[in-house]
Amino acid sequence: MKMGKKYSDSIKLLEKTKLYDANEAIALVCQTAKAKFDETIELHIRLGVDSRHADQQVRGAIVLPNGTGKNVKVLVFAKGDKVQAALDAGADYAGAEEYVEKIQKENWFDFDVIIASPDMMGLVGRLGKVLGPKGLMPNPKAGTVTPDVAKAVKEAKAGKIEYRLDKTNIIHCPIGKASFGAEKLQENFDALIGAVIKAKPAAAKGQYIKSCVIASTMGPGIKINYAKLG
Image (cartoon, rainbow, N blue to C red; front, side, top):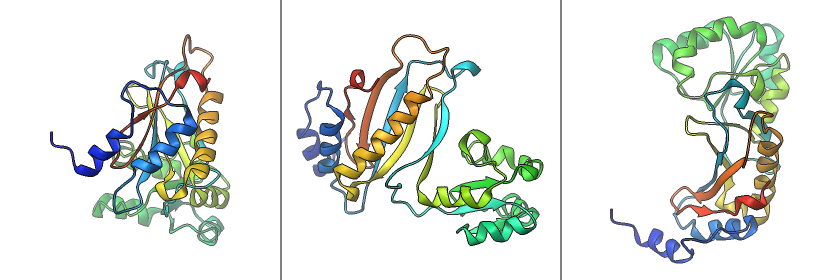
């Protein structure tokens, strides 16, 4: 596979076998983000748990101190005065059956987050087969099923991210944009790592954080010294 010149230049900044301290890795990831657009900085955390077991699930949500740098489009399933409350809080769309129909009939997905009031979950459940695989199904643990839809909308717009394990026991999360600079990215990094450590299941044995890699959209992965993370 032929590497582009910018990627090759970025690789030269790294020591292949080195595990970097978090602050070093974050400073380096900013240097390796050389694309013409504002690259997203992502964190990939492999955990020493088995996601096949219910008592070893790691899932939650956190509002990053400096947001994600992304304009998040929010769809709210609600009825009555909660529809207007959601729109007033900044939701892009709010309603009920009409949006279920739009998703089913038009394959419409012009949103990043779905929030639902608990009484709407019977309705939203009809979309499980299309929302589930896309990771869009509202969930109480992520704070996206809640009676206070207005608060949830404000949090989503402020940069709330959901973290959860994939099938290989890895959490993939954005922690901001390259343009944030090292200081803001460090604050977001600390907040996410802190939340993941706090969410450690009681059933987890041995080393909890097995590896941690940070990378920009087009840049190489930079390995972080996970032993110092907890």
